[in-house]
Length: 407
Image (cartoon, rainbow, N blue to C red; front, side):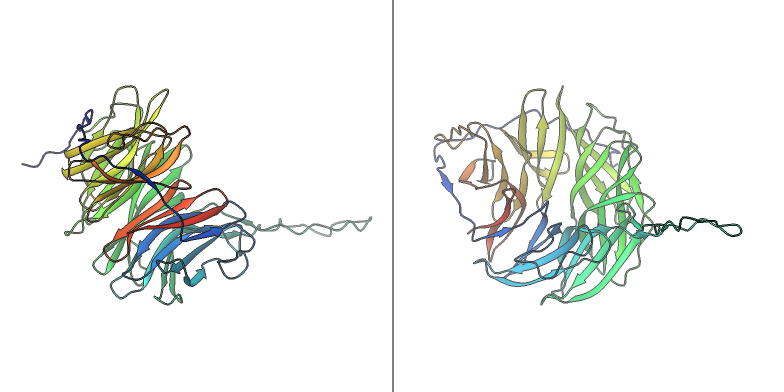
């Protein structure tokens, strides 16, 4: 009989052998992409030859994104070679506001990007009765149009050469923030968060390649967020995030627990696992193939980056935590990779004693031991890996994005 729920207490860290201690090396971006305002790269995906970036720009103009700013923010996508040469870029903006949050490369080579957008709200003029006296000939100001909140899921299809092929949208009753798009046969699954007044809930929506969306399914009551997900061979998904709500029969054990949720191919919540520690709040921020999960543990006076490799849902193979100023972003390839902002010693890197918080990326072995370690010039905001290119990180210094390739 399947258990209805799992409650996971991850309170251990396996000892790491220092027989083959790693040496901290430095990395250098193959290219830096400057921006002016609060721009953001939210996701990256790799083909055998190219690095694809997607995100949001608020800069009025850009040296690496063609065209002027449409609304207050535009979504964009760009393709680069592993050496940093731009192949193409495309602005996905209009007179409304858009953001882009996740992308995937389809089997036909086209790229699907998910995000959110607004609509234009035009005020209806008040009805007048009879003639209106205006003896001083005062100019009457025209009613101003305004943007709605981000209440539309946006779905774009772009060719492998950078041409827009299709654009679809789903209108939500609530403010919407898609976090991840996954491919499920001929359909897509989109997961993320929706906001109802002061409450946040996780959501699930499926979409066809012709833009037909299923009804939205929500999870939680007030404090449930989904940050990332992977898809299984049966089209069920494993989603990770944080929650202070009861989910299925699992009750919260702290203000916010890190949660791992198995969701069926039709959006039914099936299994919930919680990771918790007393007097902390926890979250899973990322998940990669092989159930490698990265996140954050927040105490009253410190933060730890948490990285756990699961053998199966609810069964950790190993778990490590490092003193940090951020959560951990993870990706799986031949090894496990994790990036975070380190502010203390790292077991397995004996000479690492940072005087200031420093972004790092670690390659971890089959027991969580550090195999190689690198510093980054700025915190990583996206990570991906494949056999052809290697491990790719996008860093954000506050004035430019860096493209880092480790192979």
